[in-house]
Structure formats: structure tokens, C-alpha cells
Image (cartoon, rainbow, N blue to C red):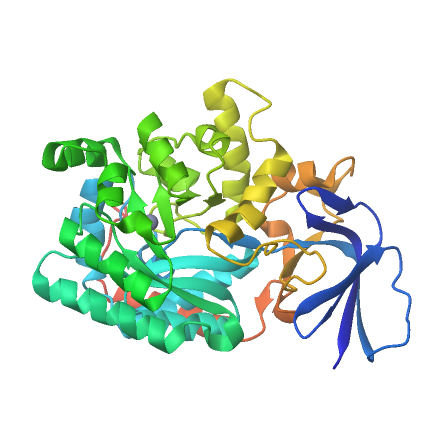
Length: 439
Ligand SMILES: [Zn+2]
């Protein structure tokens, strides 16, 4: 057994505990065994491999609680449109052109982008998930995967049930436990009630959680009242969705009763401030959700509605947006925002308690941030700097289970130049040209 020690210029263990000065982190077999201030003292024990990064800060990897990784290939293919038009006129027709190879390449492109911006774990709901699972395994990242299920007719419903079962059976706990799986009904407006029932039943049968989009737009809520006489949240509850552990993305347009239902059923929520802003959907009542002790994580959503996968942006938005909305500078303080993007997101994605921190016994999933940058100077409060001043460009390295998966901004496990080449080639085959002024 080998122990690896990294000595850094500063260490953030979690949103409450920081060493603002030289510190170290040691791990064995992918888990943290020792942390401390100052220089690591050699003591009798396993042989030690040392890494010296005195000009870096180490902090927990960010956790992206909601997204559609391979949508990186649709980045910029439809902007400035309301959600339903964007989906029906732009996204669904383009998605019909995506195959296994595109999803594999789009997922690797997403993994590279997420690693570069300090994300170690992400959530995915998409199609051709066998290809997505291969890509994330190759990148060395952790993920909670689901095959997006829509139920327009019985054939598509059966296909959704089958694909979900295949994904869970083939990949649950895969790549040394880095891959987890879930059931992914897209939304109540794409899955009829009996299909939601069946998918919830499947999650129960397979003992995996469920993820779904809920109450993203005002129109969705109005349509739900028109069709079912109730909100999407109550409708989902009545369809048995909350009988299994559920992660609900968005929950923008929720009233008091909805929030009570979410809290009473211990439904987790993925808050995606940037995607909600860009699609003009609105702003989720984050503070109200948190005040009812609802487990909330932060997510980027897909790159076609964001248009990047940068969790540093979400982290800052989650903190500043709600201050503005509530006209309250004390709302969502920096440490709370950092908590939401790390531990909170990890819990929302059903990871073990304590995941998303660098405390002893936890997985050695951490990132290095350059301390010698203007953003980090001076260093009165490291968490303030990380939330309000830093950006993803300050991230240099990423370790997952102690493995160095991004070094100096470059992925160590896959050929990122090849990914660029393939992504451009595949995107060119869509035949989309939106630039009006192109010569
Ligand atoms: Zn989404």
C-alpha cells in the first residue's frame, strides 16, 4: 500500500474549515488518511510519495448536480429562445441526429470542460448512455448517469424502461465505484402519469434513485393545472415519483404547498441558476427551499442552455443572485454557496455523507487552484476569494480517488486534441449554420 502526500500553500477541507497557509493532504487507496497544517512529518508507515504544490490551494472538487453532458455538441445551436420553442424547434430535431459516437465524443468534451473548471462528479440524463458511461470511465470522473426517458407512445416507453434497466445492470458501481446510475424520466410533460408510475417502480425494483425535471417554467405549471388540475410537484407525488429517492431539477415555479411536498418527501433539488436565467425561466426560491431543510445541490444543466459547464459561475450566481432578488446581502453567504456546490450537491446526488469534503476517510477528490493569481490576492478570506473572485481559469489540476486526472489544465487519461477534432467533425455534419454574417 502506498501513501501519497501533497503539500500545498492552503487547504480548504470543507466550507467551514480552512488552513490559510502551508498544509498537507495524504491519501491511500483513493481515500484521505491524514490532513494537517504545515509540513508533513514522515512517520513509520507505508512508503510515501510526495507532491509539492506550495503555490496552490487544494479544495474539494465541485459537484454538478444536473446536466446533459453530450449537449456540449449543441452548444450555441439555439439561443435566446423560450424553453418550449428551444426544445421543440431546435434541440429535439438536432438530438434526432445524435448517435452513439456523437454522445461518446460530446461526453468526453464535457468531461474535459468540467475537469478544467474543477468538477469531479456530475449528473447526466441523456441518450446512448452506454457511450456516455464509456466516456466518463475513460476520463476518470465520477458520475450519476441516467437514460432520459420520454413516453410519447408505448414503443418509446418500453424502450425507456429497457434502456434504463440495461444501464443500471451494466454500470451501477462501474469503474471502481466511480459510476452510479439512476432512472431518468425527463419530465411530467414528456412522460404520461402511468409511465411515471412505471419508472418510479423500476427505480424501486433496481434500488437506484430517480432524477427528473420539475416546475422549470411558468408555462409548464399552467399546463399541468390545465391537464391534471394540480402542480407538477403534486402530480409527480401522486404518480409515485417521490416514493423513491428523487433529485428534482429546477423547481423554479413552486408555491408553498409544493415546497411542503418536497420537504415532506425528502425530495432533493438541483438548482441551475444560469440555465434558468438564460432560458428566461425565472429564479428558483433557493432560500425558501433551504429554510425547509430541503437538500439542494447546484448544477449547470446542459451546455445548450447555459452555455458552459462552469460550476464556479453557478457558485457565484447562487450566492449573488438571491442577494439581489431578496434585497438582502446576508442571503446565501460565500460559505453556504461553496457548501451547495460541494457537500450539498454530493448529498443531493445521493453520495455518501461527507462526500464533497476533504475530511479523513473521504474520497481524495480535490482540485488545485493557483494561489499566485490576482484573484487570490490578498488572502483575508480564502472562501470569499474562491466564491466571489476566482474563476475556473484558476483551476490547474484535478485529482479523483487520488488519481491525477487533469495536470496543468490537460486531461491525463484521454487525447483531448482528438476530442476537439471529433467534436468539430460531428457538429459540422449537423448542417447547422446560424451565423447570419458569415462571408
Ligand atoms: Zn436539464
